Amino acid sequence: MVKYEGTINKFFTRQAVADVVTGLPKLQTPMMDLLFPAAARKQKASPFLSLEEVTGAIGAVPLTARGGSSVSIDGTGKKRTIIEPCELKPSTFLSARDINDLIASGDAESIQAEMNDRIAELRDSVVLSSEIMTRQAFGGKIKFPIKDENGATTNFELDLGSPKDFKTGNIKTANLAGLQTWLEDLYTKQAALSGGQVRFMMASNVYSKVCDIVIASGSTAPVVWTPEGMILFGKYHILTGATTYTLPLATTATPILADGKVRTFDAANTGKLFYCALDDLDAKLAPMPFFAKPVYKKDPDGVKIVGSSKIVPAVAVSKMGEQTVTVA
Image (cartoon, rainbow, N blue to C red; front, top):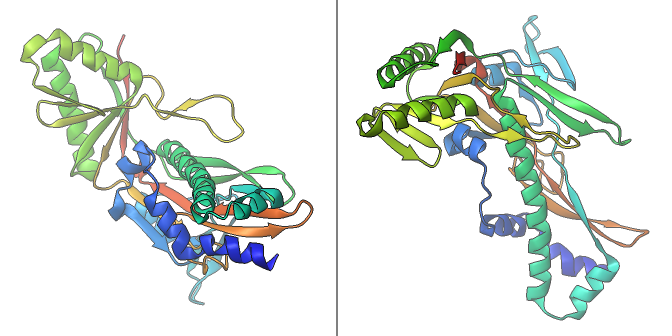
């Protein structure tokens, strides 16, 4: 077994895993990239988050299914709610036969390629789960399934607040001028709530109606089409919200915005994506977006490769606005 461990473990040092992950093609994570650019991602050298940290990012009081208790932090009666995030922890198994075959090949590149494939599979699973959780968080509440050590399924729950209610709107009969008036009203309200880089996220039917109005106006519409939507009048950045997510263990997709909804937000103030310290000594208890390691098993003999990440997408929902719009 010493031979096997020496052969396999060298591919799973912290630096080796980092090198593999760095070299992997970037996955498409549109909501994470939109809401959490590099400056909004924070690695935290603790397995916990405090109320003050999260509310500082989202402006709302979180609820947690695990822990969720208040603890004294200074002995003076001041309380701080502690959030105990759960880990994303997928695994894959290499049997002793698989390992023997790799070693027998005598080709270090073949061994490295297999390790790369396994790490990539785990990384992809973690990134996909992170994107799904972020899409759900955009709605204002995380309710993500977790499994305990006995295999029972519960939920990790976190309340991220509610958007400001911008009441109702109506663009059923709007022309281009009416569309501009409506957009400017929403723009002004969002700028007052959390100004800066105002963005519009529109449910599929609302976005379609806006497209109809723009197209019907012909060449008079000052529009620039983008992969994400459009920029209208050189000012209004409009994104299509026809995005869905499917939770683990679920069979149906949920839209991030229900029909008739328009969400406004400040692209420069969308919250933070926290990476908390991993419960893993081999990872040196460090906060990392992704880590993988081998765990040797008996009966059946082999090595289980375990990936891990501990994220909390603290979307600043309470700093966003939302309106229900009549379109037909």
